[in-house]
Image 1: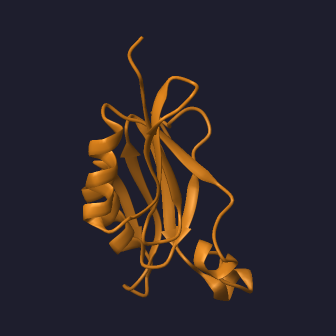
Image 2: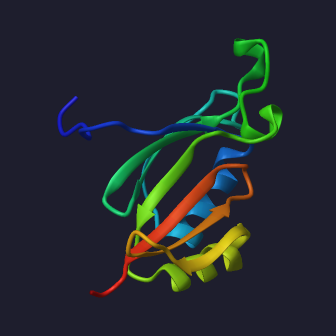
Length: 135
């Protein structure tokens, strides 16, 4: 398996993986690297996206294999926040919200020298968007 991504790769479980792929392309500028559909023709067993130079894996929920649903919605949310350094926090938040995300922390200048915000995607995953402030 040549050219495998390095570092930690988030692997998220979503309800309706095909819709999630479309959302991440529209909201975050993701590039679809690969998709492996299930034999049932309805779900995706594994997909890979490149977002902002990093890779994320995702797949549909398979409660019949795990004994329970493993989506953030099933757990009442996720304690994980995925962080993206972006060129413009405000524009990135607008793009995500226009695509269907919910802004839970509007863009603000933070004490650590960054413009920072958080959105929750339609699948229950939280994304932090940040760019450094000048100076």
